[in-house]
Figure 1 (spheres, helix red, strand yellow):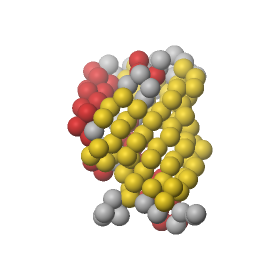
Figure 2: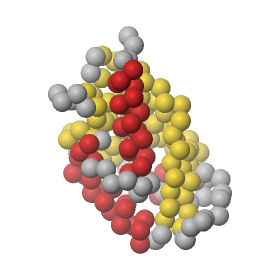
Figure 3: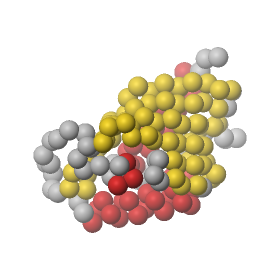
Figure 4: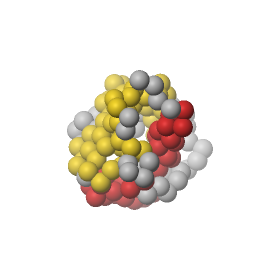
Length: 149
């Protein structure tokens, strides 16, 4: 089973918007990324439902601004695996660089490298959303978030 080109573009844009939100580069309504009943699983941190995911990202943004924390996530190896006409499993790898202070920041090794596995479902309006998003830390480095350790 193959995935139509427009669906691949839409799924990649879903991921790009997620990472822009995670790095505080764009304000993206989480309802445009996650289904109402989504699960967000980071290993030591598991969030069930859109309200819990929204609270996590709101609290995270406040904490990042208060501590002048800057992150840049680099996502690669995006592999879309169809599981049906309206269901796709996505595998990818994410690297994160993080530091606190005023820009420009000292460059260092990544604070973490993780494998991501997602289940995306097409909604009735045609939009793809995360139904399940998981990140599993493979390598942990300096400045890693507490949930990544």
